[in-house]
Amino acid sequence: MKSVKTFPKGLKAIIATSFIAASMVGCSTAPAATPTAAPPQVVNVSLTTYGFKFTGDKIKPGEVKFIVKNDATDLQHEILLVKTDLALDKLPMSSDGTEVDENSKDYTKVGSVEDVEPGKGGEMTAKLDAGHYIYFCNKAAHYTLKMRGEFTVAP
Image: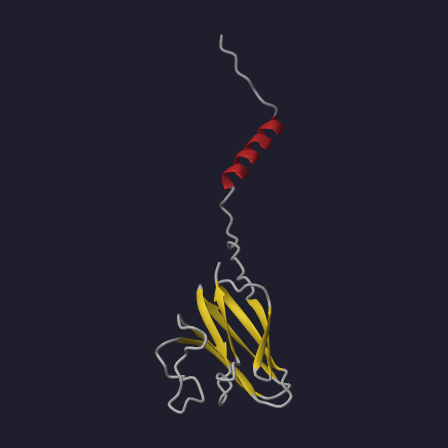
């Protein structure tokens, strides 16, 4: 004679419910969470009389927000950012030699904050890839007076 095992009614309901719940795992209709974009790196830039002061650590590839303030009390300034393999003092100059040639093909213009009056400021955000960057003020003679600098973006 065969023996048949029977389960109490309540236990049958628990087993059936558990089986149904287990089979539905991963069947949710809720949308998948979308990853949030990382906030941009922030670099504060102070424009001074013929100089720059940067705050911030090493710049890594990705979105970078430059917050610019003209802390000079006497002169309008600007900051232009270019990507290039040229040396800091070798950017091509305009025909009169007073400014960097902004139409040159020897570099890639990344961004700028232009015509910043004393005490005023502005911002620019740019996606920076690994490489060599030069920043400078292109007001008449400011580049030749060494209002320029450079940095390297690296992982």
